[in-house]
Image (cartoon, rainbow, N blue to C red; front, side):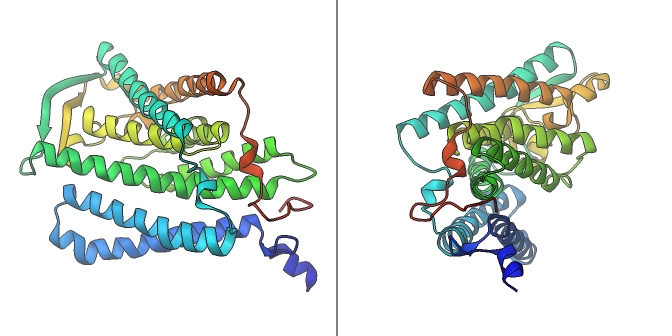
Length: 328
């Protein structure tokens, strides 16, 4: 009986083992997401058009993730660690990382677009595009901004902030040190993140694999190398917002209400590179952008911190709890 209990319970820390904490957290996020979908179908879809429904739905899910899931279930009941330890130690360095993430996400997306345009793989068919019928351009753009901010925050919490922290801590022991514990945690969370996006509109096997690469090389790496969610959060938001609301990919104004540019496919021979009709995560240019982005993240970390290495704080237990004698 004691051995069975030990599979679930860490006696030294008097709490569930890391794998079970993450499993419960992810299950909670799924349950809350399913409940929100039911609410959307029953209430929101009947009262709001999609352009306005998206930010309301995203904000509600962020509220559910932040309060009952992360703060009450994760931080207070399962983990007993401060909220800041999930990547939110707000300080000058945190905000600087956020700015770098925003700039990097925008530049990578604009760089791919410029190359596609030069090679004739896409064409610009208009500017300041709006849906017809639809809301005014400025309101649609503001709705998209709010929606993607909420999506970036909640996805970084659900797929990196909580699980990577706990998995790295659980794996860290005599057999696996903190460096490899963090790397394995990044790999695991990135794979699950990619699978969670496998049912997106127009998704393919390659787009799913490439989303795992995107998560690993840009988002998980940004978290692992800085110990904070600022850089991946900024990059995640800018990547999505620029792709949809600035460049008009992934349905553009017809689907989301507005886009600064209206983009159409040019030479279909470039699809393996552009990823269309899915988006840049479905093409080889997206893979290349992830590699370039990883190098630039490493260069930023080296400049700010004097070296490039995973941040050891990700594998540490909460303050006041003794480290486990072995891996979880």
